[in-house]
Amino acid sequence: ANVTNYYSIPITGSNLIFAADQPIEVDKISEHLSSLKKKYEYVLIRGDAKSDLGTILKVWDACKKSKLENIKIAVNKQN
Image (cartoon, rainbow, N blue to C red; front, side):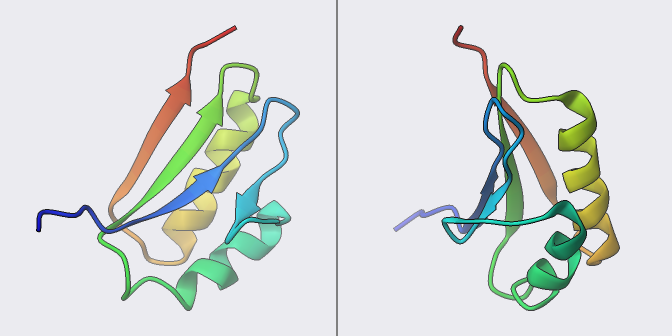
């Protein structure tokens, strides 16, 4: 009953970004999210321990450009 409705954007250890289970370029994320923003409570950027911080921040900026206010970041700390 209490399901959290969020959109996940995983970033791999080699800095590949995924949206809807497909690889996506960072400059396409804002446009992609603009079509989704009314369907999700928040976006979760899921980084890997080896993900580059710069890549994570570029994805964050893309989310902001698409007027999404509720953005969360989680990083997998496993080696």
